Image 1 (cartoon, rainbow, N blue to C red):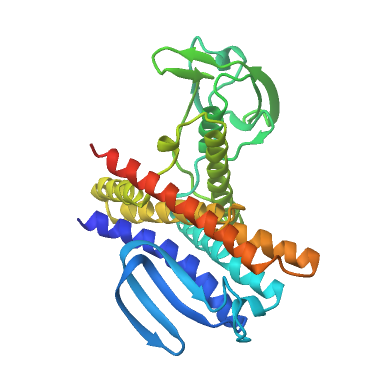
Image 2: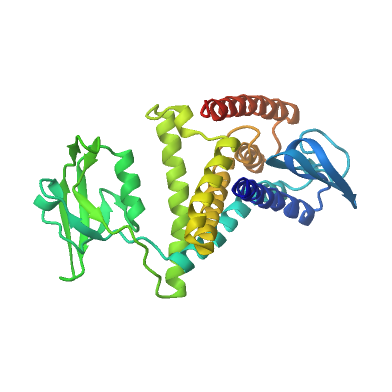
Length: 348
């Protein structure tokens, strides 16, 4: 029960920070915020402070920052659409940007406490191409084809998305102070049911040696999560993975968070807090990038229209834009129903 509550709080925090970004920049731009809410559906309770209603709603997923005149014509000078185009751009972009800021803060906690996972070879496996190509224990993988490698996870993700492909491997041998290149063709393992280079890695974390290094790896954590999200979307579009395997709804996400928090709690408070921080990082970065996709009704879709307005010097017809966003909202709600159905189906 406690792990589920923690999971809901994590989800709520990520959404709260996203909506607060919109809220803060709306206020800074003199836009009237009608309602600031956390959750969806009917209100559990709410209160008025100044001109804004603050609400907590029954479903602990999602949230909103409703601004005056956001989707219709409004004569009030404090309406969203009556503000400058660049002011409106900052308001819409603030949500995803605040998610990336939150993700970076949690990345600093993780890297500062746990460190990072270097792509250092522990040993090579007999009968596989890496050993035949001359790689040794202690070598550090620097590149796979044109993909820069900074962590052990980079290698795992790259291999997952490029099964069986030839690999131009750039690696460093610290003992010799030299960098080498070789081509490796992964070999299929019947036992593991996947293609392997034949390398085993330590997979353990190493502490950073300075604040600049900590900041570097914290920023890289954000990059890693953004890249993984986009690669997953690419595979979904190319039909390399099934939608039900690629997408998780709020129920499944809360269950996964609760499960990992509960599992790691046996290792102590630090392990549990690092697990929570990691989920906050993943969800916040993912929410930021997903909201920037150029899909109507999402922040990215709204930004497309705002940038068009900035280029053209005049807005797209408000009624037509509203209809496009409404169609996008209908599609998103349909997708949400599909995702929730899969969430529920996975339990049976």
